[in-house]
Length: 302
Image 1: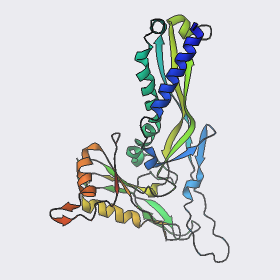
Image 2: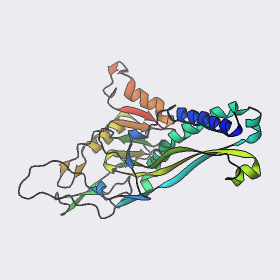
Image 3: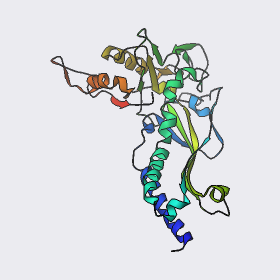
Image 4: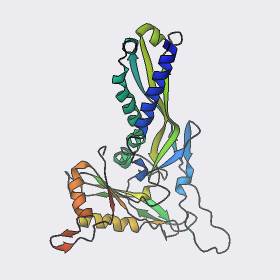
């Protein structure tokens, strides 16, 4: 084969390694985030404030008003580039780059995880669609179903007094809607540059370039589906209190939101404690009523 054919064959091989890497590990972000396709630079989510429930139709339809503060998520550009010296290709040393290309695929597949999970820790200081911080103690619901009348406060934030206790979260992952949003503009793409006449990098530095490009971002969705617990030791009693509070959340008009807490998210420091609570069927000779009640996710980025 001539040089062009060799480079095309090499690119095909590298592209396959990248593709294999994309499927090597299953991302976990979908447990807490809904994927929203994007076709523009920025998506606006005014509809997040409309959390409608079916109710008896008496008289005219009740219109669920959209929130005054629409939340927008601007897409960002992400890349990863590998440079391969031309001499390595000439000397048939390309085998050492195959794992790198596969790892690039793994990294690309994990991009949503890298964007979504850190949002939980930022939620206490980041505004969401209702103008309050995502995790806050003074979200509100209105007396009337149309969003008018007196208001009552709701909270999805518990702050205790145990200063050294790691933060943990309870999530309802049973709905179509999720507490967070992963906005996908462009899926990861594999790109190459190996023509000296079209690339100064190839001509001046004698390297071929293989890169990955993607566009997207992540942001906050429905605060009602997530509860942050800080400075509070993870115990059955603390977990029961949070679950009860989440189940009591209401929407405008006083209708129950029917939140179903179903997922406990903890950092590695709480994994052993969480497994004891959720997985041990017998504790101290008695039945553990929390065994199997919630799923468990251990997240290293918290």
